[in-house]
Length: 244
Image 1 (cartoon, rainbow, N blue to C red):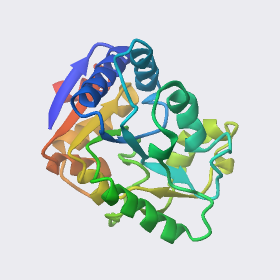
Image 2: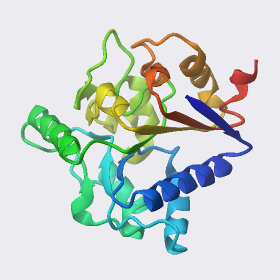
Image 3: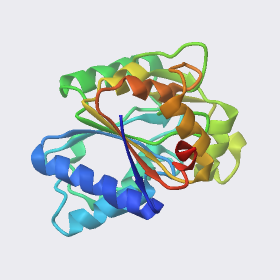
Image 4: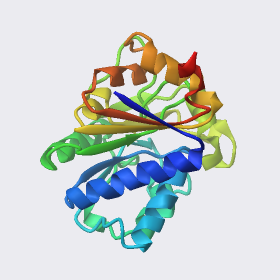
């Protein structure tokens, strides 16, 4: 893995957005894996700016989002589809038929996970996967546990993850669904290149364990140590424990 440390979270966002824009220029048909949550918001804002300046062309790209809440329709204000529409899709020229999402209201959620996994394969796999990291080390909605599921799957969300997503549901963790659909760690690790974004002191301990600790299912992000092209983009706060 490579680690780049920047002074501020805004500097991180600019660097990641520039990295994505360069990847799009080099490969216009880029297959891009995208996260949600607070961490990538600034990166998406910078991508919108770069697109407006003619420096990020999504017209031939395809996108696959990491996850979605079970039982939540795409039109729901708390859905990750709504989040992505607001923060990126409505402001860039990605073709609607090239946007791929898990359907949290599919009648058979296991079949929906299999469909999504097959679509990633049909697209030739992920060229560039952007990730955030949860405070407990989760990637996507792959929560710490005794084992990890390799392919796209249903997952029971940890209480801490539900609290972290409460803002999407009126600030009430009890309103956050208990289940979600998520790319599995095996699917994520098949991406040709992975960009992980972490900002803020709250992520410092988790980043230290991810970079220096053992590879363990108790910290899903630690599996990024095994990836041949994992790039970490950190602000000084998130990287603070790596200096000791």
